[in-house]
Image (tube, rainbow, N blue to C red; front, side, top):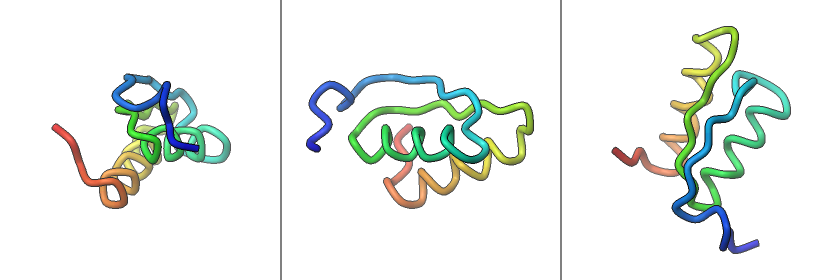
Length: 60
């Protein structure tokens, strides 16, 4: 998919530290969306954000 609706979109993904939340955050970023990763465990949310940033290129 090209990411037409998600390109440039902003999203807060809860549960982004693992599982479906992590996969969803990564997919949104892959499609050009800007993602904020949130989780009850801040360390795992940060890991997801760092993985996304390393793969997609951090955007400020």
